Image (cartoon, rainbow, N blue to C red; front, side):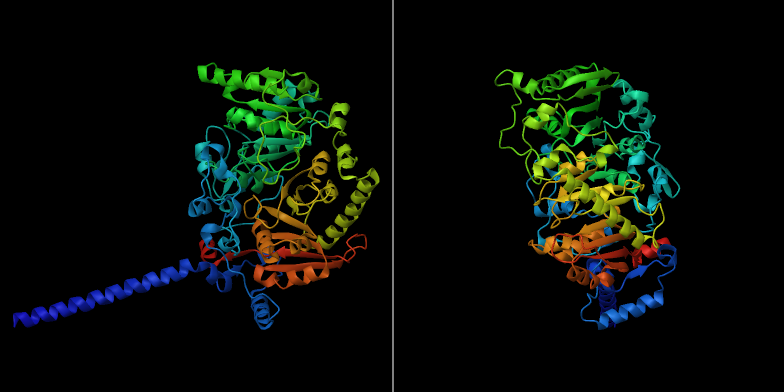
Length: 614
């Protein structure tokens, strides 16, 4: 009898374990379906658009459902594009450290190669829409945004703790505030900027020196308060930092409405042409300027204009311990061999000035290091070009001019610069281009006017900037423009910098070096027509544009009619909506009429992040 009962108990236990295992397997299956295939599931099922508070009351849920049904019946329309998993809400495809780990790239960490661009091959691309983080809100408007942003938009507070004694940023409730401090200027960037101007004896302690200093490169910029406070002096800084241990510093800068770019002084030239900046700045930027025969300092030299300044605030400039003194002696000797002179040294800052002519270079002793660059070196070739440990001499024209020959700002914006001659362009061509784009931009703003207020737009990108006349036409607006010049066309970016504007060289077959949700407006003039000629897809470009565009942001496409029709077929899948369409003026030399098509990106969240906000 007892044996029968034992057998019965054994069977019951076995059945119980089978049921438990079945339940666990079922849970694991459901979990894997929700997470492992989330990109596909979100694309068709889990998108929720926010309503009238973000789209001006024009978006109705029932209408959206109806439109979605119509799209499904239209074979010409793309039904959906998958949405990436929430953990990819800050994905930068060509600066993705997970990709480096997965592909086991052999990189030299001491040379910062792991912070340089490494783009995925087509089969490793995500090809999905980047979701905003939970609780994402339309960014605070400029100029208030310089000092405060929504915490939900960049939910990272480690810098506030790490730099609490330096006034980088402070968390206050649902916002993050920026008091204007930095590692070297705890008491505010404005006072620090005025102190530099005072050191250089500039009038009224204003650093722009009556318009002579306009473009600035701030390396190791932190959250870019230096660049943010410089804007009030009619100067514009390219604030540069890698995606390093201070993660999201550039993302904070851009959320604040301050020009910035993800980049590093590593092994490749920065994507800016020679002689682009009047001032380079490093405040405790933790860069070893002596490595590899001074190659990083020589990259700054390539980028500085004749008579340009390098402001360096670091312990090496003032500390008295043995190691700092050694670094200072060696750095001073290197700068002297590069023909830099100390303009002024006070307290914790030293400012060097670059020569106006080639005279000093020619007077150096034979064999002096670093050498002059070879005559066949193109100092403006930058896309994927390795740095060289050599000095870039001036052209004969600049040597004779004893300077850049540029007009002070703001006259510089519309004055034909000397380097126009490098492209065979005349002053008349430059002035005509400026006039044409002034008219075009006025037309754009007329089409946008029902949708925007004076403070709606702040961060803009011109995806094919040519001579920079689109940005020049916006001078009266409280915006800044990232001017992008294709890597395989005329390198007109130096003309853009000579106008007192900023930008970068780029290849639109690859992802841009910036965080998602950066720009309020993208201007794409014949960009899609150019992509057709390359071995890459227009769909990839649409997904990249969506990645870098803020929710509720705008796209202006100026291209041939077939391009506009192509984009229209993707509107629903991208969660974009048409705003306006218009015929372009017959002022193009392309031989084909262009169409202007304006789009707005809708505000949407994934179902999981939407529930977190309720």
